Length: 443
Ligand code: CA
Ligand code: CA
Image 1: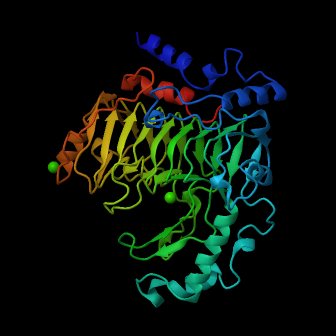
Image 2: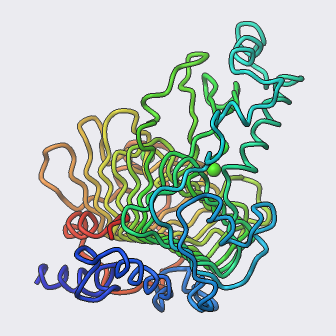
Image 3: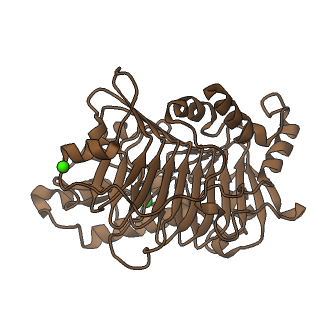
């Protein structure tokens, strides 16, 4: 019975089925590009999460043949998105963009960060000026901080690639977007599939001395950001830091020099997002849904569905939620001991519905560590399974475990029931197999 369910999932969803039984693995280059363009013509299935709301999510599927582009450089990507990175976010022409090979955000800059630094900025000068022992524990200010901010603006103009409405971006086998941020801001109806996102790093992290007990370095750049947009489908992508992991960063002022921000952050009133079959690998901050506690324009927004994603060796924000109704089902969490903080962040006015997820916990992590209260009051959770260390896997109430170990308690009813789900909801014990087999960029 369980095998039948799994078989139905393998055949019924995912990229393999999407491309037909011949698959792409044995296809030649031309045939492969043809199949990936076919993938680009697909739309989000009906009822597949919050992105199916309203008009649904069709991306650039209706593109005219002249608006289907195969690109393998940053310059070609910007050209395909409309021609000018400064204005591309307003280009609403339906378009399908196929990524081939590796596109690097620093393309054309031999000095990379050095080419983007303001002449008045250097890290050595910054470290000398704002060392808490010299400067105190107040926010950096003055000409050097202003020079850092100008440097970040330079980098934003260059390595942040802006996407307009009605766009589908799909990757050919092994396609990478490296050292750049894919920014979907004020751009409705966008589909992104089968891409390896690699290491969007900030050349100019900011020192935030009052962030946490000991201060923190913070980065500006996510691998992908969704802001002020609705109907966005992020499917079958892999998000990693490549050969530049958080664990390899230097320590400055006693804290890790954090050059990464989110893998996929959904903020600034964005809503109606479905993230399915993605793989998030080995990093600290993964997914922020809502970036401000201010009770304002985010209220009633930030509605997101996460299903069949793999969170592998990730430490926090899996996701962290404010305000939104966020459906989290059939995701597989493989949580490592080193640096793990929490999985599901229950933030201000958040309404998480977490069902039939599977948590594999390294030694030192307990079921009570999975939830974290960031100022929320409730979470609905059911059917979740936990395997702690080498213990036998078992169904666990994440809420009971949390409440037994922490105060104040969280309530058990987030006040809604997800209506938008596509295909069967798997029993949690089948989730690791299904998610590992199907998640991530894979064609
Ligand atoms: Ca972010
Ligand atoms: Ca308690």
